[in-house]
View (tube, rainbow, N blue to C red):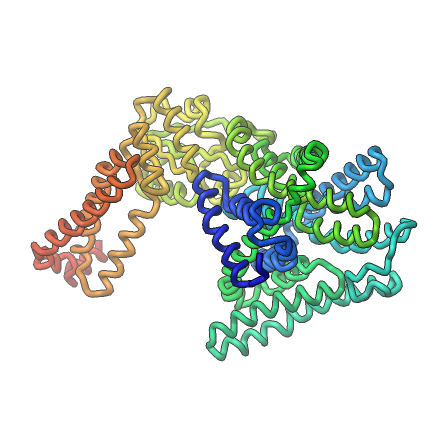
Length: 624
């Protein structure tokens, strides 16, 4: 195909637009969609981008660099310091154990120890792009799996420095090496002690620049009030730091992450995030497509058993090591599986180290090509394994806990039971308590339970979907059970348990949106509370107040609107499986709601509503 840049850009974007929505629609996530798009347009399938499309990996890796900068912006230095135990505990353990295991396996298979160690250091790394993107899509960054995964990835980025330093030493021990081919860094030909000082100088320079030069520069640019100039400045920071690290032969991703951490306390943090986010998303998508396009299917078809078999062996080896570390850290089985499967691939950094290793003749050309194919295949297989893990393994361990904490003994019983006491449930509980109604509160997050107890709440630890816990909480004698749980799946399971064992309880259930409400309506739940309905209407009331409408008139209109919307939801529930009829009926319902509200206003109730806002009434209310 032609080398025309615009044509190739159109092919990449067209493939992404076709594959990513399709992948997300069937529940596979955007990462797998981009990989599928890259495979389709790659030189080994339809060949739309030609063999030269493999070279785009060098450009696409900039998406990973930019993502690490944005991750650094979200981490204040104090928060990073708080993660030191995880970073140097789980992270160091994973890199060392994986490197040792792969090196040993290579030696047993007959490879030189230099080659085995070089491959072991490359395989120990995981894909920052795949793991963080998947965690963010599923909103799991604050979970135990997310925190430990991030700590391991961060240590891997830190480990890049010694890895790049060790690889040339392996080449010196290799009689076949041609060390003159190494052009990775500006300081490569310096003595070892001076080389180390030079690297420390580069890192120190980045810290000083980020601390003392960048903020004044951004303030100067901000005074110009030119949005595109600020965007250019944000890109300059990322590109400049990445270039400086590349000159030194270090990881650009590590440098930009460090710059992001330094600027995390800057007043320009949010502007930098908003300006760079679109570029990050586009370049990360291009990176995943480049990975898909770089899979050498010709080589895989020539040696399918050995390449696929070795790929799966390395993946399961990393899963076993990660799972063992998770067990030692006392993670639950669910969180441990999420972390272990998510980090099981070989990372994008391996493309860099393997190319470097090949140049130094530590591996032969054929061995390097095989490892490149294994690396790309492991990255492509991981999203599928994550999906299978979510569908088949995680549900089996949903209520199994590996920590030592047992459910609390419940010594008080009330007419109301609240399951789930995060922001939604705690607001409800405070309102009930302020009006003299105490509730038995259950929550499955042990850290949150401990925090709430320190705040003065009587909260019991345990899984509310379990029959025995509900029984000990007094469900047999209670009148109302409120489910304020965030997870729709857990809500459905709780409803089924209550309806089976405690059918007398009145169920009042939180729903994220209308479609979650439909799932609960299938179970004959009558009291549903959509998260944002009341808040949205209340904001509308405040907007109209500012425009001069009377408060009492608006309160009545708000209640009418909510009532009409609840009725409409129950009518639309019957048509939820027919998209065309659902859309048509929704439009009619919207028109009807607006007409009914207009008719209410046409009756001009505000003629008497002024009495509710009179000065005398306000004065009496204050006195009482």
